[in-house]
Length: 406
Ligand SMILES: [Zn+2]
Image 1 (tube, rainbow, N blue to C red):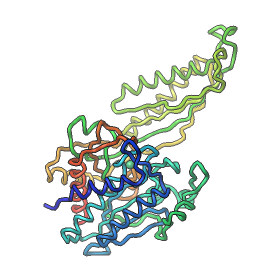
Image 2: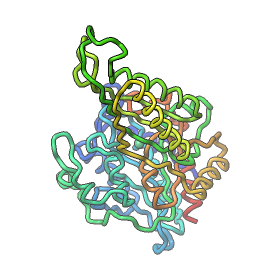
Image 3: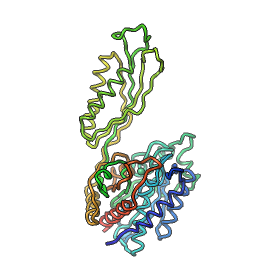
Image 4: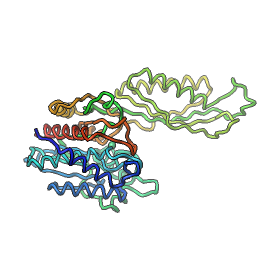
């Protein structure tokens, strides 16, 4: 059975990690910076070395192609991203891009030609750390964002994606829009603790959880802390505190549900003024859209009840809804077949984070492969993965892609 070259993949990961290397062994390679250009150039040179055609699209997404016997067939693709968080690791995203490259290198080693073409992709600005929002390159390709929107996103200095693409030489001419694809796969570290805790080498990702973001504002009345008896108060922060605590209880009763209040702001922040206004955010997630909409209703009911009791006027603004993602049963099946055939311990898993694959899944048959990462830690310089798992995941990718390519 054909196998990838684990040492070569590991060495390529380590070589890429030198571009933007940080003190604690991580990586800082923000999208469309000079360092990102260097990372892209290295990837492109590796693709050309094995005779792949390389095309850049209008969003700077890179497509490296190994032709199949039948060039009219839609390609089987694998990809991810080379950009990192400001204080990121060596594996998030990079593993998916270089894993896809390793598949093409392996086919090249064996002079193996598939029926359908095979492509390795590097998507632009997946992290969204420099240019919010996240997953823009794949999002424009999949038609979730339009090209003007993608080009006009700005970094904190006001530079646009389009200008920065032009500056680093990656404003391509290929159309950034949906074209036929046989199957898209993405290889990624889990970025959570489940596979490690269950001692599994490979996660067969069945989909991604849905996510709702809310902006919450409660209006009460500023008043004197010493002269306003308790029953007369309209204390917005007490209302928020009760909502936050009750919402957590509701979420704890629902398996796999998650809730985070990551921001809270008071208008005045004074020790002896009863807070008349509070703003906070809610991030709520669940893999089942029905459960998530049940939790949405629960939140609204709680807000009604508590604000009535506390004499507050609430504003609930659902600012963003990321739908639940279900990966393609055939692609999920190919990943499972590959893991079984190769004898790797495996389990089904739902992705907690967003990935380029989530954008792709709305328009083309998509599957994902996870491997464990140390202590489940990611978006951190100390992010780490075992060479053994790195190889296992790439072998699963190879065989899943071969099954799709015929
Ligand atoms: Zn990633």
